[in-house]
Image (cartoon, rainbow, N blue to C red):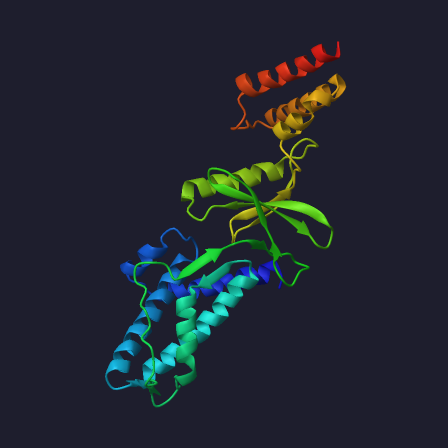
Length: 290
């Protein structure tokens, strides 16, 4: 499914659950989940309401009313379809095994009309009130030419974003995905988007390219770097000729110079520490080759 269609589908799912309230007791369990926290809170509460009611009817009349039976069947249908839709979009949302098994035990005897007879040997469902029953692991990325998500591997983490890597199966090229953390505040999320906009406006051989921002998942794809400059130097420091050291240092400085020419400053670079350290490293190479 094209990314635009996925975005529309996810928007519709989010809107459907926004129209259904959740109580503070359940909302608090999913405060840090992000976009799908309200959906999970709503589903958790509705599942608990049905399980508690069924437990009670199993101990008394053995009959679950007609309308609640229909509602529960509809809830099971929504749960299955919506979690599958999230998975297609690369959001691996899961229901805990205990509740999944409870649903599978209930569904065969639920009737859409006339109420439902609770089996005599029905085992009460262990109700989970103070822990999450839904979890989310966004560990994949959707590509236009791919019907199924491509797995991501986490390679780094910063103050408000994680960085993943994946290999595009169509081109055999590795790309990086920088994704905002689920608990990031609005201010940092704006900075994250601004970071992309600035990088998108830059075009220079020694500056990493970025490609597209995904509003739905607050992430963007970018050129993949095999290793950091620090790692590159530490692995080869004893064998690097002065000409190579000079070339690497100049590429670094050309990149910084270009950024400054566009009226930007790199907030993670300290001229006093990094540039002087690069100069010392360069001079050590010159002394070693003399």
